[in-house]
Image (cartoon, rainbow, N blue to C red):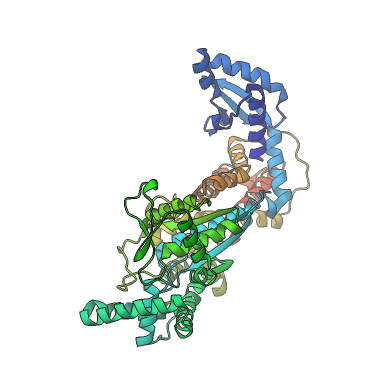
Length: 559
């Protein structure tokens, strides 16, 4: 709805001024929409901004619809405010569209690759941030109407995986959750390498041998790799499922050797005269500002991660209009190399969302040394704390467990997405569960409060009256204008790929709703006001529910 209001103003301004004015329109604390174009024109024409703003306003005012309630000129700014008719239509539209409210009709197909953790152990908190950012973006883009496909890119050819294979050969797999069992074998083989130099050299040779055999397609070694990697992924998938995260497809890195895409990439680079062969094969990237050449094939004939990733991105170019990668900030150099080579090949590089690392108050982690907090352990810790918070409430044990699970997963997902990806974060589970802070719990509680108000209204008997007249306080107005911005915010995320913008928006709605309810105790209102305000409560409930679902968080009706 807000997009309709904004688009109409933008169209009329652009038509009159014969220029694109979109960058001069912005939301403001002084108006629903403010235009700064008069300042630019005043500078060019050496005139007073107020004078120009008045001319513009007089020219377009008659062409604007009833959704524009007022236009004011304040020190050169042209301030637009929505009308009561707009507010009324917002509430009615939300109630009519219900679960479809906020959906858009954008077209196109998008691939989002996220998580893609090495299959040498369980996910840890850094992986959770990757997964939640990727999954939330996928949900937002689907809400926008796009056809979204999500990939887990299985790194089955790296050195870490080869070490995990050797670890399983020597020590087998214990009866822990599959990914944890693989991690134990991986940690054990690394411990031997740290403690015995002779064993280290022997293991390193074995790693090189099995990596070569796997790349050449040795059946026995390939079967061994597949079994261990699938075992690790089985456990990883269980963790992701609990976090309400699903991948549409798992793509194996090794497949791009088997299907000929790696050879195609190398041949294309050679045809462009960029391939240097001196034992190993290199790509010259000096034209892109790199001091060192990029190795794309070792002396023993095996490919490297970047070679196979280039092949994967050739495939992406052939199959998708838009493709997005979620990567840790430590991959920025690699991401630039990958993108630059793709551009040299005349192909589209991926859109990359880089995220900074996550830490716990306990400190740093290392999978190789076995010093890490697994995602499973973190989920359990947050679940236990959530259960403690609600254990004394009057409901069945089953309900308490379901709510504790939803609150815990919500706390994790929201905390990992509410901060801009480029900002480092420390996850504090106590703060994540604080019902008074910027948390999922606060939003879930606000949704549950709206549900409770509506339940009580039905129990008390809904008044059978027709509301007449413009009833709108500042608190009502602020809340309804915010409710109207759902697709406006979705559209912004579509362009910026920053899911934290949407998380902030849903939290702001929860805050505005609680402010509204504090000022207007709906169930105690006179009959003339009650239905009017119950409609606002119901509209808020719908937007909070739809927003939480887009964030992958369960909207609770009782807490």
